[in-house]
Amino acid sequence: MLVNKDIAVSIEGLHKWYGDFHALRDINLYVGRGERVVICGPSGSGKSSLLRCINRLETHQRGDIHVNGIKLDSDIDSIREVRQQTSMVFQQFNLFPHLNVLDNLTIGPVYSMHARPIDAKEHALQLLERVRVLDQAHKFPGQLSGGQQQRVAIARALITNPEILLFDEPTSSLDPEMISEVLDVMIELATTGITMIVVTHEMGFARHAADLVVFMDEGEILEAAAPEAFFSRPENARTIQFLDKLDLAVAS
Amino acid sequence: MNHKRTSSYVVRGDGQRLPPPTSHVGWLGAIRQSLFANPTNVVFTLLAATLLLLIIPPLLRWAILDAIWYTTDPTACRTIAGACWAVVAEKYRVILFGTYPYTEQWRGALVVGLITLLAIVTAIPRCWKAWLIGLWFVTATLCTILMFGGVFGLRYVSTASWGGLPLTMIVFLITVGLGLPLAIVLALGRRSELPVVRMVCIGIIEIVRGLPLVSVLFMMIIFVPLFLPSELTIDKLLRALIGMVIFFGAYAAEVVRGGLQAIPIGQYDAARALGLRYWPATARIILPQALRIVIPALMNDIIRAFKNTTFVSIIGIFDVLGATKASMRDVDWVRYATEAYIFVALLFFIYCFSMSKYSEFIARRLERK
View 1 (cartoon, rainbow over the protein chains, first blue to last red):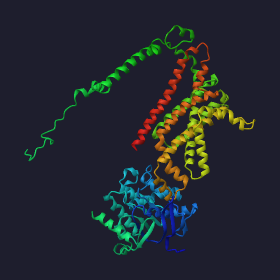
View 2: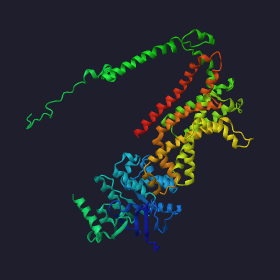
View 3: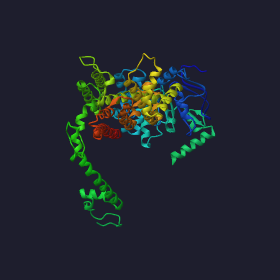
View 4: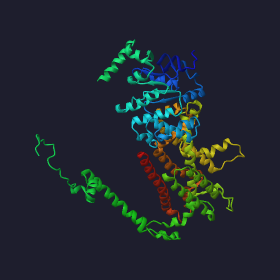
């Protein structure tokens, strides 16, 4: 086993089943500290399941996951520790609709990490300014556009000072004109040295911001390479097919 | 104007703004549209009008024109064809306060007044602050002191003598006040990941929902003492209350469960991903949303709980209806029991109708958000 201070997430021999369905098959992946990994692949390929195993929103049945050296098993305390060191941004934003933007941000630090409400509020305002939605602080999520909601969700993910950010198709439910405002924030984040694992179809983001691009299909990792190699010299036939389809979609 | 092409569907010149046809404006138009719009409509309108003509005049004659409003002599009512409302004036103290000592009945009246007042305050959304909960605790304490007495020079009155409207209100408030938290706990327990907790909650909910309220009350009265040592007796009212609370809780639990199931899984994901433990996540994120969804349905259960208070009279506790029934044992007045029951029905209607209208207001308010 790899125990290394420079490894943020290590996944070894991971298997996951949903009932009889073998969703993840022998996944091995190491994410270095400060690395940005993009996971792509057709829908149903298991990329979201893999991401959700990292903060144990899904449980795996075989193999090992270590996050910052903490082994993920059924131990509740280690799960909570992992969740405090990671944050997740969801496809559907998953903001809390009954709380205003500010309370959406502060609820995590106040009720999970016992931060003082006044400190949490100050931190929240800083982050809202950083993702450029400060003027919406007292609105409710339902009053915001999709792009604004996702930027609030990113601010909510940042407020617990996570070391690892997990993005689960953050732009997939956005209107085209809003995708770039969210991607801009993510690209800005990528320059800060935080570890990011991003499930996305945004190949532009992968090309420019990723250190490693991972291609998954049918629960397996078929290809993992630096973006330059991944896009110019893909080796696996299915990767090539997938990239061709994306190109066609972009071209049309 | 020189259009190259003039098609028939392009407006030429100014489209005139015309008033609606006279058949559709004013009260005449409204009557025509709602009562005489088409032949079927006309037939039903005439049928309804005939029915109303058959019912209303005799009812008016009985209830108002031929009625006696006040007399202390029950024989005076025998000579008339109309209602004898005098029975209400004669018996209202028993109807409203049951067997509560006559000279102490102002205490019951005060309890009813306090609770009604606080209920009105509670209904105003602007008052939904933390102090309201405090106010309820103060009022509950005050009402307990008033009803029991035994302190501050108030005569002690045991629960066996309680009755009438104060009792109805106390039973209602305790049923809802303790039943709702119980419902929430049962609903959460039913969805618990711990098998024992889940089985116990499902068991309670399904057993209680499978029984009529009357049998739950009889069980509390007859069976509970069998399981207790003989020197330990639990107050009859308290036993009835436990039955009412469990019954309400089991029904409302299913309503709350509906709300919990309506919360998207993403809300749970987000709460867990933030590292929130079960109780903070439940209390701050899941329950506020779930309860908001089910408020209209819960109001329905709450109104039913108010009417269900009358069931306690079956086990010999004199709520308003039970007290009315008891007061009609008076042979001089028993023939006017109908009037007394109409009075009680009106009393129930006022409370239930207000709650029903209020729940409509709340539902509209929630929809707006």
